[in-house]
Image (cartoon, rainbow, N blue to C red):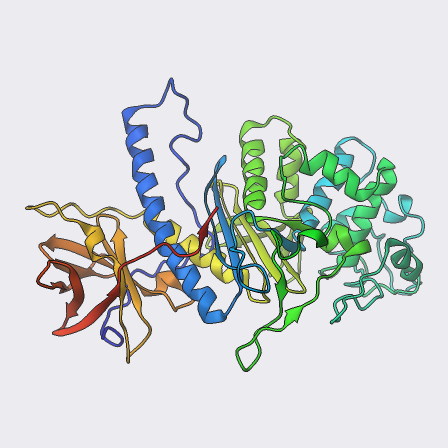
Length: 506
């Protein structure tokens, strides 16, 4: 009975977030102080409370959207501080998703290709502003009468080279998704005309990043897949990441793919595809744990300044904006999407392939990253931003002091509380010295979260997002002392069940 009379609480309009760095990220045993230890303990509790709510919200979202599986990982500094899988990854619904579940990460593949290009740039084997045809003489588009500067590697990495979005093959068309071979791409490129003169328009191009991967192969004399495995994936310990789709693991530890939700609430099966010649742009598979590890490598490199796979200065150059559209709405680094969100400089990439969606959102300044992958055609950014907002709110929240009197067992109030017929059920759980009361069905978990300040006994004060005090709610207990309901404005919402672990741990 809370719908329509519960105040909307703290509304933290954050997408990706500025999270405090771990107290122990940069401290050694020699200089760790009591204050450091206290802060680390505080953040550990805060993280635990945030991910408890985040897990409940993600699992509820997954069920409402009928997404078969979602995996998520959060990196802070050098550590993956949380990862979780929700749902199941096989057709029969028996294999649980985890943080190590393998998904197609599609266009996140472009980050690895771009790193390979920049490794060769560091070694002086290629120049970013040299015409691509210097390295790939066959990569000449059909003649175009419009005046244009040359198509360069910088243009390819920033999607500003004016190339067609795709090779001249219908590989995004189901049910078979006929990806071309490298030979077929090369044979067809001379018949493709530029869409725009180079360096005049942003046009996302899988063809362009495919040519960037071909350039790496040409200047190294090593097959693309072998090169990135030996020079990027293996050195970084990305054991679940590969420049291919492992068909033999499909439905075992690789999630099967499903399509978009139909009007009757079903998702059609999607056949497994082979990216073949488009692998540099869209052919990698990985896990969220590996993507979090990949983000932590970037934090470590930028912090230490010691070369590891790349020089730190090279990675900074990749994160820097190299192309921005005239309307200032789209900007790109070298391979990385580079943009601002809530005033923070973000980098990362998303991926969308038949049956899979993924995103990697990175905040270098706060050394925080969130990776989300799923085996359905829904927007993973919604979940990354929602989880980021929850983390930011809890990790920066000022805890309420304990009320005088007997110690308060906040966990005793935790549970799912009924909302029918007014709305969906809600959750109450410990949050920064008090409780959080939140909707789980909403797509914006922070937009409908209310903090409850303990007053003693079973009474709590409703607090607004601005810290303003409102009415008092009271929890109802039965004869045995168990909480059975929450009362507000004279009406009660029943406690349907205590909280349980949702989803599957790493």
